Image (cartoon, rainbow, N blue to C red):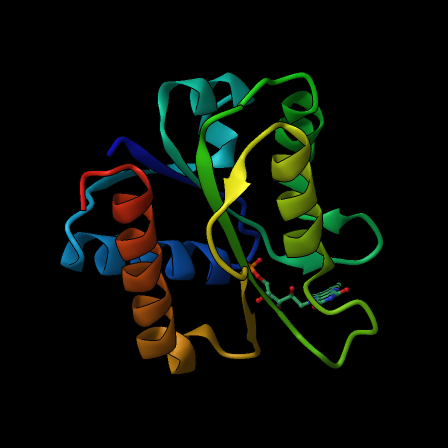
Length: 151
Ligand SMILES: Cc1cc2nc3c(=O)[nH]c(=O)nc-3n(C[C@H](O)[C@H](O)[C@H](O)COP(=O)(O)O)c2cc1C
């Protein structure tokens, strides 16, 4: 199943999570492309079946700054029939915990993407959530493969 992870990351935590998710998917039989949002435009999503988007949350705009143009351009994309999931790190000391992840999920739904599982939100140190992130990715892969009829 053609799969892509697109992430924005300022300090590197979302990039670290993207690496764990790539590894978890691999363990469950899905290889994927991983792209920093700075290197792609939203149309790249048209080429894939399983779309995984990740952003940290930063007040006041919530979505990570590099990801804002990609997020805006997504609005005009038709992604019906595609499968998806979202993830991101945050910090519950802030009043709007992981709001960017919710915004990405809503945008994907509005584009026609079928969201396969609850989004992954990590509070605090992402390295401490490595095994939970791997498990989330393996479960996502199992659902994606069974939905597509190839699992
Ligand atoms: C200025 C600033 C604003 C932040 N605002 C929020 C916020 O509103 N909600 C939240 O959950 N986390 C917030 N965070 C925490 C970041 O999302 C968190 O540190 C995240 O791991 C950064 O990811 P990155 O390394 O991929 O950039 C904020 C952090 C900073 C420095």
